[in-house]
Length: 171
Image (tube, rainbow, N blue to C red):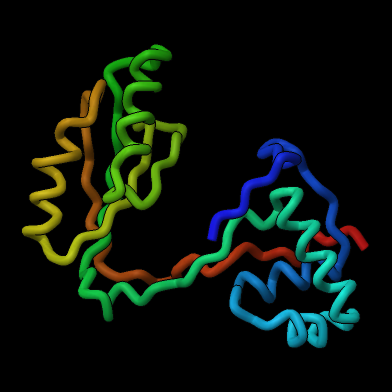
């Protein structure tokens, strides 16, 4: 479920106290936790906890709720990271590339990076033949690309499960 906020500003840093940080840490691990159980774990009344969660949804600190899926159980055997170098850094080339990537459901993540390459893309596939299809049919057609370097992930050592919010709490 995606939450939209009138007040949401991606560049705004909103201070958090320890209770907000604890609420967010718990929600990162279990977004389906009941409000009653959440309020018990952070030591607030049900209404105070609910009010804080709604405020964090409203101001954009909570942007959406999701389920973490098990890739192996879904038959998604491989993850691939692709370094992409564009032909130029002209605004038109950057925009064309980014707009194309945004339309590709197969692209799980895309980051503008520093260094020899310009972007880092993450994709997943059920098997090598599935990745080859994705590469030939979709990735090879991305605009303004000079070079791609493919890195096959052999094994995931640590998967992202949430941000470490301990250091962000101000009180």
